[in-house]
Length: 248
Image (tube, rainbow, N blue to C red; front, side, top):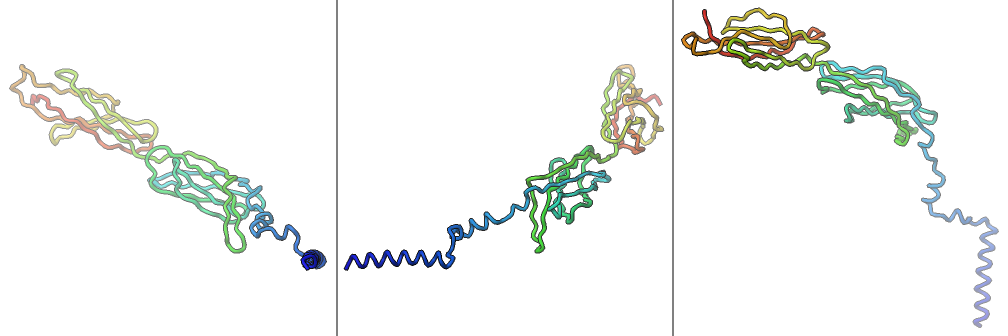
């Protein structure tokens, strides 16, 4: 009896295999997990894509607001681009454009006085019919340009007495454009003398109190300094006051 059962079991197994093959049963590959099939059949979207062209046509800054423009192009297979705009190492904004080529624009405020660097980074992008976007970060391209934010000149002033009769004043200048022309003025109380052109160092007569003139009255004299830069802009006025003997 046991022998008959073993023969019957082997026969059923053999018949099942033959029927499965005869009826076009699933191949070994078809029995692989679904995730493996998806992985082997899906195309890598970003392979071979790149930004084929990128430039900065111009960039400048006025009253603290920077603006720039340029052009971009992507390789065949891409249908868009993501552009990032970095100023002095900080990402200020990013814009996506559709198509195979076109122009980009950038603007940002808060530009401080002096020089700055704009870096434009571009990445190819794929947008499918459903509007889904894929950005390819493996093949970026970047371009850099420098620009400056103009600011009016600034001044500071230091003065020191070099003798009983003279006060030496030295003016310092910052910012502005090109060369700076220095102007000076000395004022007694509310009476202002005319401004006159000079250098960054100017000596003013100012007699100090001594034993010989101890009975003479003193008056407050103010020495003032300003500059004008090559752009025609005036600086602030820096001033220092000294007590000087008056013989009037």
